[in-house]
Image (cartoon, rainbow, N blue to C red; front, side, top):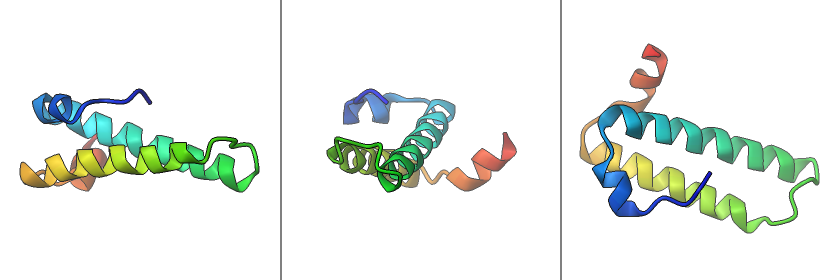
Amino acid sequence: MAKVATKDIHDMKDDQLIHYINDAREELFNLRFRHATGELENTSSIKDAKKALARGLTVARQRNLDVNRELQRG
């Protein structure tokens, strides 16, 4: 996942933000899995992925979006 500036996250529409959060969750899961299996060389990427997810979730909370419900919807 490419780094996205905080301002760009704030400028995203709701559906784009939900998609960004979903992608960030998947990326974090994959990094953790690769770390557990010993394939991950750069462990700092886990920290970056956590921050990206936190930024997205923070903006979603500010907008009063229910991310889990939106993701279940499809």
